[in-house]
Amino acid sequence: MRDTLLIALFAFLGAATAGLLGAGVLMLIRRRSLTAHLAVVAGVGVTAMLAGTLAVAQAMFLSAHDLSVVTTVVAMAAVVSTVTALLLGRWVVARSRELALAARSFGDGGDFAAPDGPATAELAALSRELAATSVRLAESRDRERALETSRRELVAWISHDLRTPLAGLRAMAEALEDGVAADPDRYLKQIRTEVERLNGMVGDLFELSRIHAGALTLSPSRISLYDLIGDALAGADPLAREHGVRLVGDRVEPVPVEVDGREMSRVLGNLLINAIRRTPADGTVAVAARRSSEGVVLSVTDGCGGIPEEDLPRVFDTGWRGTHARTPPAGAGLGLAIVRGIVEAHRGSTTVRNVIGGCRFEVTLPATES
Image (cartoon, rainbow, N blue to C red):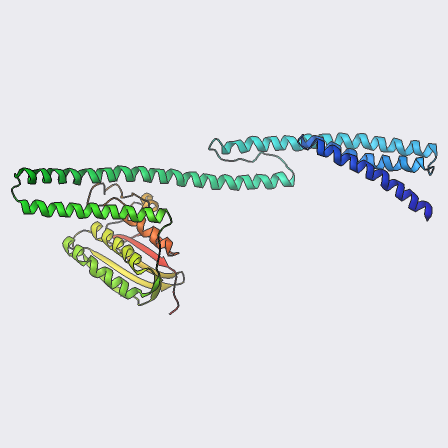
């Protein structure tokens, strides 16, 4: 029993010495290739066995013949292990290089395509993560391009919408100043109308900037949706009469909601104004509200004739007005973008879809317990 313990002790000391030397070598070559690391690890295992054997032999526990046999076996194992480690390391390094080349497509604005062929579990997991990141980056680039397009359209349309009324205001002001205005009262009334429209445009831009900056502060309170819609319909009635449009709100359930009354009134007002302006004379704009499994759904249905399917995803984008709405009174295309921003600030969602004769805008808000 004592001999066995001594053999184990000498073998442990020899193997530990080899392990410490191997750890030192790994620290020295920690920036080198994976092939070198695998070769060192394989060498440490064989060297530890050889060191333990030599330590036992020096303690006179092995005969010279036995030591020669064991040393030969260990040496052959060392050669095979080292060659195997080098081959395995070269294969892993080659796969890593292929993965690095494929990952460079990120910087070129391309998509990631994992190299073909087998790979280690770690490299396969890394490939899957890079593929998922590639999808997210592609989606982000698409959103960025769409946002940049919206910004350019917004600048172009606002520049156009500002230039026309400003030119008219200048002309009317000069006519009044020179005393050549045939009807000064009519000019003054027109100037007031244009100034109010420009003020509304500036207000929309300010509201949208607050939404995009995350500075929209809400003061939610418990409100009946029936009362909220009733006030909005009353406010939009003069515009509806001017356009010859009927407002209908007989399908509104008196469900409570926890919202900012002022901001939600703006949402309803923007939806109604948009619907009235797009509905022809003698048409109908219907407002409805109901409770559903998703929350409280408020809808505004107009008689615009429908929106092209390819334009539906862009309806709530900043500056979008459609191909038929390039000039006033269409506005700067901010109303629906403001609607989406305010609703999302309430943790809700907005959708639009075509129905018979027009389209339906839906706002879904979190339900409040009765």
